[in-house]
Amino acid sequence: MCLAVPGQIIRISDDEPLLRTGLIDFSGVSREISLAYLPEAKADDYVIVHAGLAIALIDEEEAQASLQAFQELDDIEAAP
Image (tube, rainbow, N blue to C red; front, side, top):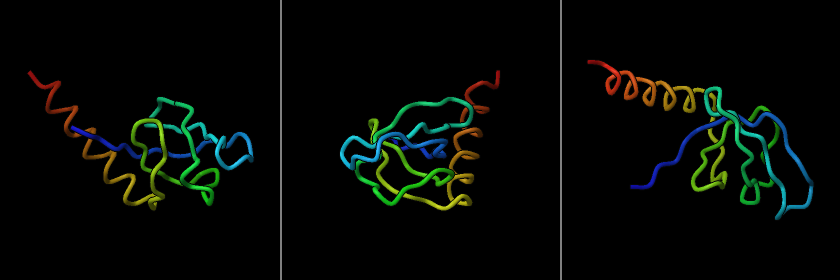
């Protein structure tokens, strides 16, 4: 199963297009992610990440809806 996760760009490193990375926040967990596919991405944007690559820009409303759904699944799994 493939899963793409939304996150918010905290900061961007390197201006070289193929080496460009961003520190992405996934609800409190941050990871360095390649932005090579999204040269137009900037700090505070929301992106969809799959396998270490940001693959699409999304708006904040869509990102929050996805994060809420993930949280609800986590809550169901944690319930006794």
